[in-house]
Amino acid sequence: MPKLQIHQFPCLSDNFGVLIRDGDAGVVASIDAPDAKAVAAALASQGWRLTHILTTHHHGDHTGGNLTLKNETRCTIIGPRGEAAKVPGIDKQVGEGDTFKFGGHEVRVLDTPGHTAGHITYWLPSANVAFVGDTLFAIGCGRVIEGNAEMMWQSLQKLMALPKETSVYCGHEYTQANARFALTIEPENEALQRRAKEVDQMRAAGKATLPTTIGLELATNPFLRPHSAAIQKRLGMAGKPEWQIFGEIRERKNRS
Ligand SMILES: [Fe+2]
Image 1 (cartoon, helix red, strand yellow):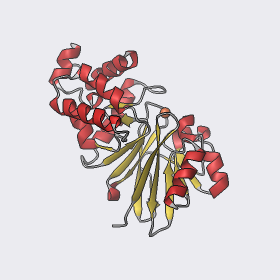
Image 2: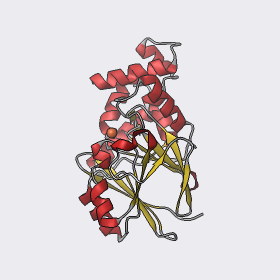
Image 3: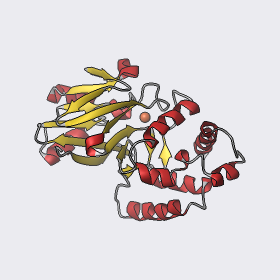
C-alpha cells in the first residue's frame, strides 16, 4: 500500500488544518483551507508543495484560503457538488458515491449534509482515514445549520458504519467543551468518564485531542448513542426514534 503522510496543525481560533501527502506520487492536499498563511507555513515546515485542496463545505473558516493558495500554487480544488457555487475556486465537483485517486489512494466521497446542505466527507479506505469537516467532532457533532436533525442523523450513521479503526480528522478542537456536555447526557458512561479525564490532561499539556477514531466515538459520543438506554431514560424518550433522540441532544447542546 502507498504510504499516506498526515500533518495536522491548529489555525484560526479553534480550527484544524490538515495536509496529506503521497510522496511516491508527489501529491499534497490541504483538507479545507481555513487560512492561506497558516496552510503555507505548514507546507513550508514540511517542505511540501501543494497540489490539491479538498473542501468539505463552504464555510469561510474552511475555504478562506482557497483563492490565495490557488494563485500561489495552481493547485486543483475539489469540493462538494451540492454547494459548488459557494466554494471559491472550485475546479472539480464531487458527491455521494464518487471516487477519485489521490496518488495511490482511492478517495471515496460521502454526502454528509446537515451542518451545511452540501457538506461532504472524504474517506480513504486504504489509509483508514476520514476527513469529516464539521459533521462529526470528537465527543460531539456539528451544528445543524442548513439541514434538520433527521438529515444530520443520517449523515452521522454513514460515518458510524465506517470501520471502527478509521482515524477521523475534524474541523475544530471542541473536544473539552464537548466532553463536559456529554457528561450531562450520559454521566454513567465509564468510557466517557475516562476519556474526559484524558482530554483534560491533553489540553492542559497543549496537545491536540484529534484525530479520533470511529470506535472511540461510538463508545463515548452521545450524539452517536441515541440507542443507549441510559440516555433514553435521562431524556425521558425511551423507545422514541433515534433521530428524534439525536435531535433532542443537539438542541440541549445548542442551549448549553
Ligand atoms: Fe462549518
